[in-house]
Length: 180
Image: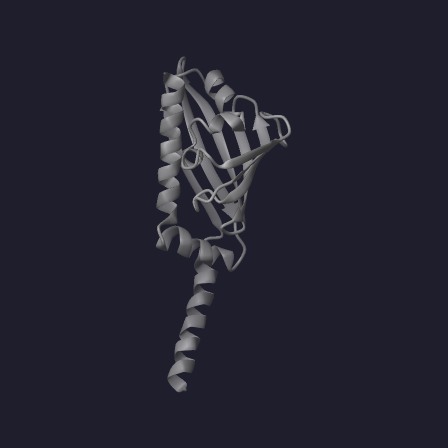
């Protein structure tokens, strides 16, 4: 009985320490330079329906059930999907901010396979007459104990590597799509 109590106490202390020291902010950013003027790049990214052409997650299930509400390219537009593929699940993405020509912000709300939400963004910066640096990112602020769960899922289980790969693939597809 003492051994069981000691093991239980060690596990509880480990969880408390993990919650105390795990970061509460989660952010990933990736970037690419596209050889196209900024206005053309931003004109592509500000419409969520366009993302289906180059977004790596959308490409995982082209047959996902999709629905749209509102005016695409405007704050409040919602794109929702339902897929049996776990990476996509059931979720919706809402445009929450547009700084014309500069920044496009959304919130993604997952319902399945788990409930979660986070914010994402795409920024454009002119680096030359016909060159645009595109940065995509996602971020979230997490309360305890979600910060510990996020650390375990994203770092220890390798989910963060998958997210980075999908972001890199999305940027690569966007580059190819716009430069053709």
